[in-house]
Each structure stands twice: as structure tokens, then as C-alpha cells.
Amino acid sequence: MSRYLTLLAALFVLCPVVSTVAADPQMCHMVYFTLKDNSSAAVDKLVAGCKEYLSDHDGMVYFSVGVRGEEFQRDVNDQVFEVALNLVFRNKAAHDEYSTHPRHMKFIEQFEDNWAKVRVFDSYLK
Image (cartoon, rainbow, N blue to C red; front, top):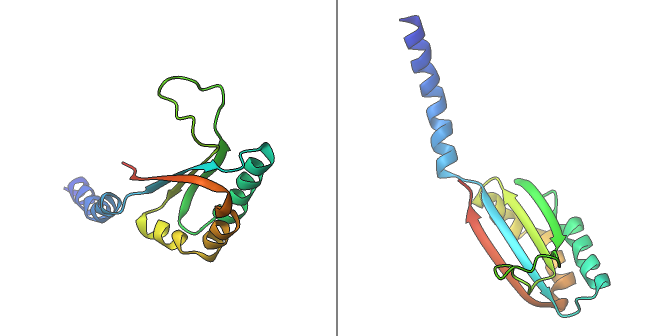
């Protein structure tokens, strides 16, 4: 009987956690930048800007930025971007906070003049 009560108590404790995770999933925010000036200096400058302005925000659980791998030439590989930014947030609310944060806005202000195209892919993680 004691084991049964312990198991029942554990379920009552864990049920809200499980439902919170399911109701508030992590959010992945992937951004692909195609640049007007796609010289190595311009690409390096954007990568450095991503690191300076877009990393270490509250609610961010993963950050990475890098360049397109030139050697990836399969038919399915997208070839029309220079810089890829991948962020994962604790939830959509953390992403929404990030999207209006002054550091994010400063990044846009400093770098948008060199963007030929920006593609954003947002998704929830399961």
C-alpha cells in the first residue's frame, strides 16, 4: 500500500510538469541570410554580429551561427544563402521577448542594408 501511495503522489507531482512541457514546447528559430555583398569579409562581419548581438538571450537554450558548406552540392541542398543562424528558445514567449529585445533590434539596424534576402523558419520541437 505504501508503494502505491508513493507512486500516486509522484504522478500528482509530475503530471503538471508533463502537461506544461507539452503545452509550452521549445521553439526553433532558423534564419538564412543571402547577402548583397557576399565577400568573405562581409560574411565574417555578419557571423561576428550574430555572435555579439544574438547570443545569450534570456530563454535561449541553443545558439549557433555558421556559413553554407560549399561542398554540399546535392540537388536538395539550398545554395542561395551565405549565413545560417539557428536558435532554440525555451518557449514561444522567450522567442517573442528576444524578437523585440534592443540587442536584436540593434543587429537588424546594423546589418539589414547588406541583406538581399532573409528567410526565417520557425517550428516547435517535440
